[in-house]
Length: 303
Image (cartoon, rainbow, N blue to C red; front, side, top):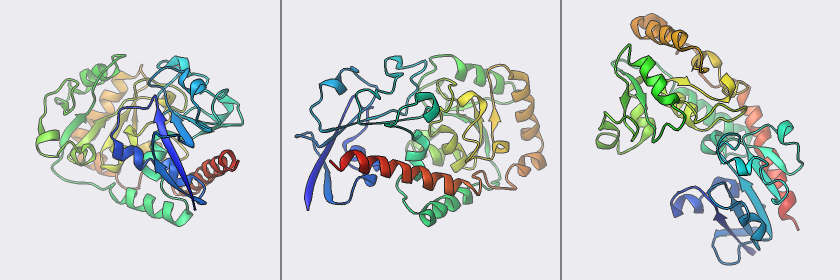
């Protein structure tokens, strides 16, 4: 059996264990043993945290560009998704907007929650488990925000809106006023969110298709997301949009009244949990997307 090596350049800050278990490698051809190594890698994954020319200079036989970050307003050097230099480019933008045969839309949330599953039954089981956490729980706290920064001011604006009802609990570095995320929940964000009715989970920017793990973390915790991103549409083929409160940058009063109504009326809040957040047709969409990724990886690695 062949031994193949893969590594990372310009990658986001993460530990070695995560790199070694990076789920996209699960879609590599199974004719060899794949190992993480910086020594003469067969495949190198590139991202946006460094010099764009690194992908041109690399001697890796196969170059894969991956971004879970916005490239329209942040990391704009990579707005072309490196389709001219990578054998395969993976991002959040639509395939129509990038318009390159070596590009696939595979957003970050998909990798987080469903990237390891290849068969339809596996995916359906994962969705069923995800949906099982969407249930009404008593004695919850009001609203949480877990964030490290606020480059464009959206998070402060949302906090100011919601603070008119009750103080928002901020367990991250940004606006920190709650130590329980670390002290009581060992920095486990989803477990922390299970104790709240609402979660402020805006993306850094609102760009078409830019959906990270944030809204899914909230739903997985049984916590109603107050979401800003993806031009007001958070993966409508996957998520029942009635489970999300959308902030579009101009509807401060609408968001305030929606949250206040749900907070002050337990019966209205309970109605949000009458049906699961992930749609029945989501499994087929995810299955086809994972098949598409696997096919593209096999194509570029067969040589």
